[in-house]
Amino acid sequence: MSVGTGGAQSAVRARDVRGTSASPHDDTAGAGPGLGIDPDDLPDGIVVADEDGRVICFNAAAARITAVPAADALGRRLESALPLEDLEGRRWWQMTDPYGGLAIRNSQPERNLLLPGGHEVLVSARYVRTRPTGPVRRVVVCLRDTEARRRTERSHAELIATVAHELRSPLTSVKGFTATLLAKWERFTDDQKKLMLETVDADANRVTRLIAELLDISRIDSGRLELRRQPVDIGAAVGRHIQAYVASGQPADRFLLRIEQPLPALWADPDKVDQVLSNLIENAVRHGEGTVTIDVAPSVSPRERAEDEGAASATTSVTVSDEGTGIPEESMNRVFTRFWRGSKRGGTGLGLYIVKGIVEAHGGTITVGRAPGGGAEFRFTLPVGTPAYLL
Image (cartoon, rainbow, N blue to C red):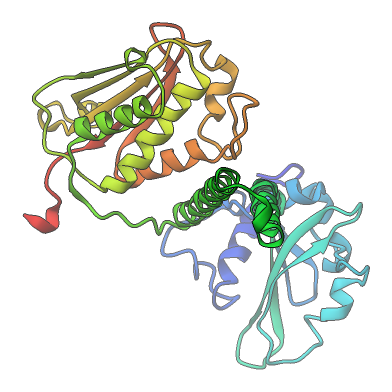
């Protein structure tokens, strides 16, 4: 219970909170029969004032958010115990006048308000009446700290700033080369024109990839990432990526592919699996050193094994490792967050965040650790088996 409140007083507070959901005379309404909910167990700050405007409940979360001990708030006038102002400095309770305002009002929507000292909180209120348009018997105020919302807003702002920075360079290049070609086409040789157009094409591809990343992040964050599951030969998919790197100039002996047969049938979105493989192998090639080893093998979900040895779930695991310096131990818990970069060699820092979202959307897991050769090791698993809708 909150500091400075006795057991009897706490019981009164709990009864008053339970009564605000329906009739103020019904001590158990709103809590359910026999639940006995303690206000201090609620995650949000709860402040309740009676029909005279005096505080009768000030739970532990409210004391933490406002930095006011419950003992100092109980019994005081609501506007004194909770002196809120809007962002323009106007006193909130004088403006809203919950006890003397319109009789048809029953709530105040959530909005940002300020406590003394400028601390910003999210506040919503409920006016409890015994009958429609009757007098207010209780004012129930809900307080929430804005820190979580501020973190989300900062994350969105960082995303916008990163995207703007990453788009500026290729678009400047595209604009410069196309304007030059249009203005001075006859002055350039065919080889010069080809080089300029190849640069424009590469920069256009870079912009396209960035936009695709943004769409993926939006779908992952909103839980709307769509998967089109089909049979996938994961070994062949890895082989195609290796062949592409060899064709672009990487030595063939830099890659080692080991496939443990037989592999169970894997149903997954082939495009999304390619996206995961592309990111992990590219990171190993660009940021790692030595041989890039890719192991593909059947495995068993550790989670399922722990829950039921007799009904363990089959998975396919893919491990990508290199022989470079690896990832510092203190950075491993941030690898799959937005904007994490393992080096200063460019990139948006969004790739591994998207990889994690894709793997988890399939029902799989992904981990990072240190490879036997000292470099980074990424391992992801995908559950296998035919989707239920095809059975």
